[in-house]
Image (cartoon, rainbow, N blue to C red; front, side, top):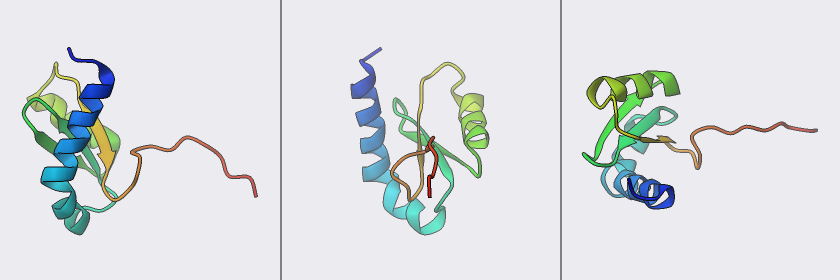
Length: 81
């Protein structure tokens, strides 16, 4: 398998070039799992839902996840206010 940085960049490129504009209009806030070899994507209201849909079709392939309309899929942190 290619190195992880190349893999992620390829998945992001597929999302940005093929799906971003459409999905940001129709599926904002949903999770989008990209399978970069095929270029297919799978949507879900939760990360688990999108990943499960992808695993049914591509059980052994690595994937990359984005959250439609957000810079990252998941944010771990805290708010101090």
